[in-house]
Image (tube, rainbow over all chains, first blue to last red; front, side, top):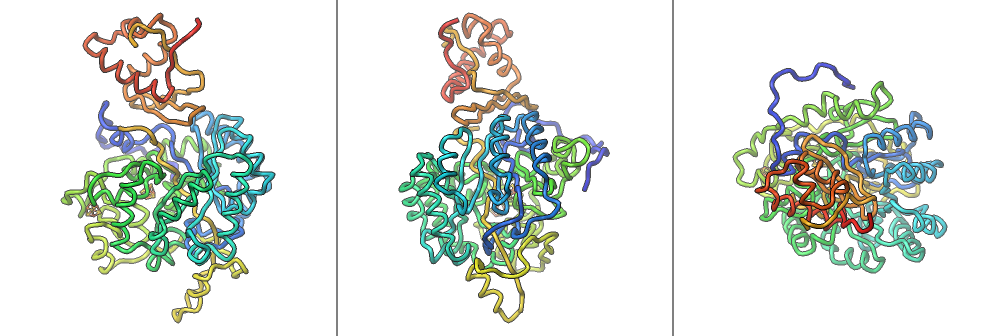
Length: 418
Length: 88
Ligand code: SF4
Ligand code: SF4
C-alpha cells in the first residue's frame, strides 16, 4: 500500500488548457466519475468468469458504520453516483439501509445483481425510489448459454427479477451482458429481451480478471466475432451501454460511442469490500492497489495522492503500439487485459484487432498469480457446468467459483460529445 | 438567448475540476463538462443578472467570444443544466 508523500519532483508535463475532454481525463479528475464499490465478496452463485473471484465473505468487510462514512466522504467529494457490486451486494443484511443512506446523501446508486433477491416487494420499493438503477446480469439469451457459465437456475433467476421489476413499474432496468464466444451470436436476442422488459442493454467485455483468467482462453470472442460485435455496435451503439469496454475495437474503423480511453486511476476506480482501493474493477491485484480508505485521509487522499494513481495520470508511452495507425483511437486497449494475460502494459491488447495481440500471446509471457481469491473452497449445487468440466480436466486444476460480473458502468459521458 | 434571463437549474450540482467543472443533473442523471473556468463562472452567475448578455459582460467575456459562449450555453440548456428563468 502506498500512501506516499514523495510526489514526483521531475517536471511532469502540464495539463493542457481546454482541448479535448479525453486529454483532460488522462490527467485525472479531482474525484472519480466511474466509481465501483464491491460491497461484499459473498455470493450465492459461482460464475465461472467472476471478475472479483467472489464467493466467500471477507471477515474484514467494512461495517455498516464504516460504509456510511465512506458515503459521507463521497458526498463531500461530489461523487454523484456509484456502481455497487460484489459478490452479490444484496446479500449484505444492511444493503437496503446503505442504499437509502446513499440516496439521502446525494450519492445515486446503480447496483449489479444476479436477481436472486429482487422479489416483488423489493421491486416495488425500487420503483418508488429515485436515483437508483438496477442492473441484472445475464450472460446468455437462453438458459443453456447463460447457465453454463453462471450456474443452474441463474437464467430463470434473472428473468424473474426483470419480470418483478416490470410488474412493479420500475422503468429502464439494465441488463448487463459479458460478451463471450458463446453469446456473441445472440446479440439480437439480448436486445429483444431488453425491449420486452423495457430495459436497456449493457454489453461489456470479458476480461481475464479474477476467475475470468481461468476461462478466458475458452470464452473470449474469436477474431471474426469481434468484427461481428463491432458491426453490431456500429448499428445499435446509441441504444446500448458499453462503458469503456470496446474502445480497442475502434481500430476496425470509427470509434464507438462510450468512453474511449482507459480511465483506470484517472476517472475510474474500485473500492473493494474491505476498503482497499484499486485502479479499476478489473484490476484487483497488488500491482494496482492504491491504498486503503481506512487509513488517514480516507478515500480522498488515496484518490488524489496515491503513488499509483499519480503514475497512471502521467502520460504513458504506447510502446509497440505507438507506430500503429490506430493508436489514437485504440490506445493499446485495456491495461487489465494485458496485465492478466502477461503481456507488457505498453504493448498491444491481447485482443488487438490487428492481430498483434495473438502473436504476442504465443510469445514468452508469465501470467501473474492472483493476489487474492474469495472463491468458495468447495463447489456447491450452484456451480456452473463449465467449472465442473474444468475440474475434470487432466491438468487437475481445481478451480471452484462464484458471481455476477459487475463493472465499470455505462459511459460516464453518455450524451456528451467531447 | 442573449437577451433572456437564465439560471442554473435547481437540480444541478457543479463540481470544480482542474479544467473547469463537472455538472450533474440529479433529475435526468446527465453529466456535462464545463471545459473552461470562465464558463463555470458565467453559469454560476446567470441567475444574478437580467440576461445572458449582461452576465457575459459582467464576467468580462470579450465580445468576439459571445457567439461561442451562446453555443456552449445552448448545449447546457439541452441537458437542462441551465434553464430559462421565469418568475423572479
Ligand atoms: S484497465 Fe481495462 S477495464 Fe480497467 S479502466 Fe482500463 S480499459 Fe477499463
Ligand atoms: S497495435 Fe495497439 S494500437 Fe494498434 S490496434 Fe493493436 S492494440 Fe490497438
